[in-house]
Amino acid sequence: MRIILLLAVFLAEFNCAAAQWNWTNVDSSFGDLPPSIHVYYTETPTEAKPNKAYYVSIDMNDRSVNFSARVGNGKRLTPQQYYQTEHQPLLVMNCTFFEFVRNSNLNVVMRDGKLLSYQVQQTPAKGKDSDMYHHFLGSAIGINARRKADVAWLHVDSFSRFPLATQSPIKSWKDGVPNPPASSFLQQGKFKKWKMETAVGGGPVLLQQGNVLITNNEERKFAGTAIKDKHPRTAMGYAADGRLILLVVEGRNPGKAEGATLTQLAEMFRQLGCVEALNLDGGGSSCLLVNGKNTIQPSDKEGQRPVPAVFIVEKNRP
Image (cartoon, rainbow, N blue to C red; front, side, top):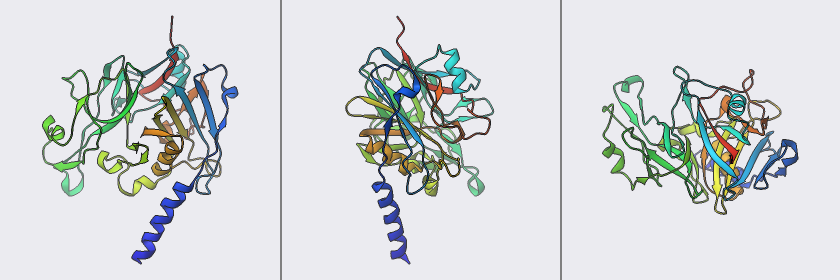
């Protein structure tokens, strides 16, 4: 029985690694775009299941475009509403996880080098451990003033201007301390100030040093067997040649697009030549607009889900 189980795991990993997605340039479907921005589409089945996905490639060295983020300041807006209120940027994409009571982000958001949103770094345990707390670090992707991207795990303190970042994941832990001191995290890794101009958080990290290494358990995001669940996906990564990749996968559309697992999503980024990649909020939130036009079909029956933050790419204003 053990041999059979091991063989099944090997075959699943082999099938994912063997999957090859064929991408078609569809720039002409989305109006005028700068030469540094290209849109690609695939309907290549994923492990024999129907699939629809788009990605946008952006040359970060093109200074005619600007990377930024917007928050709803206590409100949630649809990506289309952000597109209208933010002077019709080139790209609008959902990003952070959030909670519905106060419409607040659960991850980092940075704009113009300033923290607009902090991240949740602990959650109460449940059941027999209801007097305990899970402690963990979330992850984010950022772009600095030199237009270089980075994915890192962050410790965020409201008393500090910049987050502290480590390039190695920190193992989560559980104890009875509701608010552990920063040293509880910082003694576990090498941290530096993360001086980013623009950043958005999510999780888990999908790709590290060009390899599929998913930190869902360390970040307590889709931990355990949830890594295998298929959903609509939003994610972002970057390649060594300076390309920023924004990727969305349609899902929950039976017979047409069934979504992707985190492993399949990571493999897409690896095949696109990315060095690092990060999962963002998916499911009904997944949405990417190019010149105000939808790419994937949102999975909510109402259409685009209102979200409290978006990542945007816009033309530099004179």
